[in-house]
Image (cartoon, rainbow, N blue to C red; front, side, top):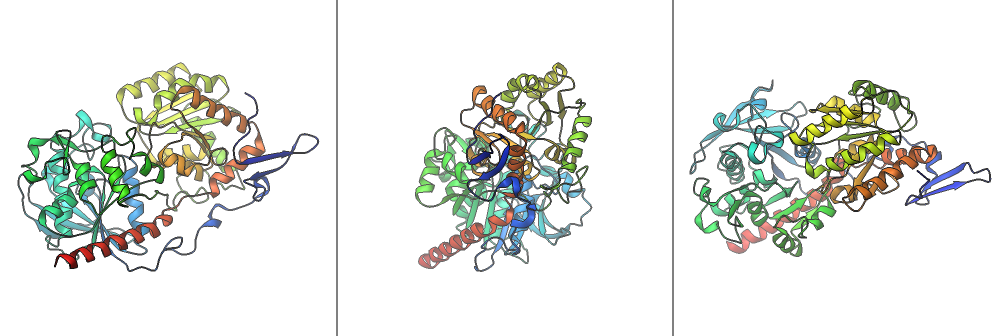
Amino acid sequence: MGNVALKGINYETGNDGRSRSLTLGGDVPLAERHVEEGDNDSDDPRGHGAPSLPSQRVLFVTSEIADFVKVGGLGDVSSALPRALAAHHDIRILIPAYREVVASSREIRHVGQLPAHADLPACDIGEMTCDDGLIIYVLLCPELYEREGGPYGTGPGGYGSSGWEDNDVRFARLSLAAAEIGAGHAGLDWQPQLLHLNDWACGLAPAYLHWMGRNVPSVFTIHNLAYQGLYDASRCAALGIPDSAFHIEGVEYYGKLSFMKAGIVHASHVTTVSATYAQEITTPDFGCGLEGLLRCKAEQGRLSGIPNGIDDSWDPRTDAHLVQAFSSNDWRGKRANADYVRHRFGLGPSAGPLFAMVSRMVHQKGVDLVIDAAPHIVQAGGQLVFIGKGERRVEAQLDRLAERYPGAVGVYIGFDEEEARCIYAGSDFLLMPSRFEPCGLSQMYAQRFGSLPIAHRTGGLADTIEDGVTGFLFDEVDLAGFMQAIQQAFSVYHSTELFYAMRRAAMTGRYHWRQSIAPYTQLYQRISEEAGVEARSSA
């Protein structure tokens, strides 16, 4: 593999051909920088440029939270974003009382009751307080939520044939509870001024408010449009959905009931988790049949993209999960983590790069492309490790790959937070050839830990990776485009100063949840003011 010219980087050499300086976009030479990764953080806990706007009472409603139960990125977001927003708002969370929640060591105080509605059972509301003071309301309904398995079902992610048969009732009950709390009907001593709802499982909440005739503003955040919560139209009556709502401008989606569409139609504002994905979902390629509706929302100024971030625990200098801490000025700890990962996955000693994939092992994530690229990576002197779980067919393919390349490919089917962090810390490159990626968090984690992502230019990957500076992007989702990016990575790896300069750029150009406070605060204020104007005009 030959040398490669990389976008945004000037690599200057002297007469003897050796490196003299390396600059990023004409700034200070990166090869000469000695920057601690935290130096670019704001001292203001309210975030970068947080506006001086009134604090709001916000109910953040979600179907998963990493504190107790997590399937994917939504669990991480639901744990971190409310905590960041709590610097400026009175924010509380509503989640179902899953088995893991009830079995936790935290005290649950009964604070409210909700009556049955249609086929949705009556339930209680419990309250728990986290060590950092965050208040979580839990929806207590044992027959719906206290089960062995994941939050959505028994399989990976709990979607499709592995989802619980009564998921429509389970998440309609969550949505109705959110609406009832928003309307002040839950008997609590606290009432939100607005609801922040997340993904299809909460999609009916703004619709229930509309059918109640209650003007409570709401933000509906799409984390992944591909999962829409589709059910047979005959289920509407059981869920308390009026017949008049089942039409093309309501909850009807190609003859089905769509929770996702209900949220998009009835929420005050729709957000998604990156600016690029907000544009993509208004097109047929990414809109999942809802692109027309989403395009209308965008034209009305009611669709926007606010990127996710990572929290302070993702710091290689202080992370207790790591084998050894490190910084952008001292790589010994990174090498120690790499040695640990190689030993843990049965890989041999190597002077070549270590590639990693930390992901749900499903088609969306492009695992097939990584499997096809693996022989080329191994032949060029690289090694690969995989951690995650997903489709059984894909898991079997990964197991066969490890058997084919013992000592060069390691696979762990499952997920372990400590192991994943060590992999981010020990790897040189993270593979993310996702066919679509609304935001993605893995690339942010990897960059923070000095692992350069190799990713498809889509969604949040395009927004958070600077090609040739903090990672590598490719345009077409095919093996040829992916392999070209991998070849660039090999070339950079063998250009030592360039490689370490990119590492430093990745580690210092961080995305933090504090960046989300200002745009959400402005959005909350805007929709609250609009709701107030509407209420006064209809009085």
